[in-house]
Image 1 (cartoon, one colour):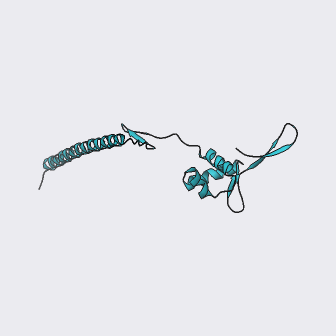
Image 2 (spheres, rainbow, N blue to C red):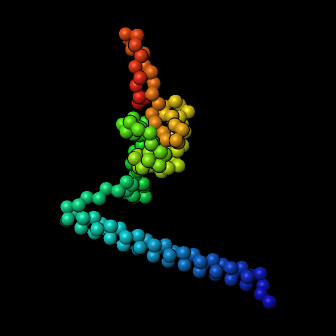
Image 3 (cartoon, rainbow, N blue to C red):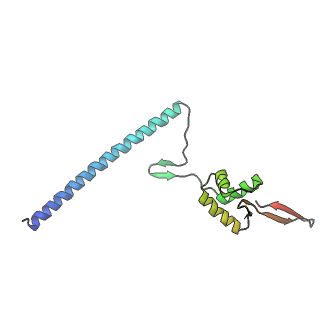
Length: 145
């Protein structure tokens, strides 16, 4: 039978072995990261030699992710509907503004509740027409912008 001292010693030995193994893995991961970085730099230099420039949407620099500026999806939808001058489906709008269908649908609902766009009987979306009073007393229909 083992004594409490033997159990404690065995437990400490196991913890030490785990610690050493974890440090070895960390050092291996560090070497792997350095190799990947060297491959990246070599590839970028090769691209420059060929006169090509790659600019990804997000670049990783020292652990920080730098993202492009956030787009105003609602404004993009209004512009697309106004410029196209035709009713469009949710999928057509999403493709035109290069955005996901679910996010586009949520933005469409918000714009509809704000009165900026309307959905017709066919389920297509279009810019809401507003009536603007002119200084001469006449009215003029204009698309919402």
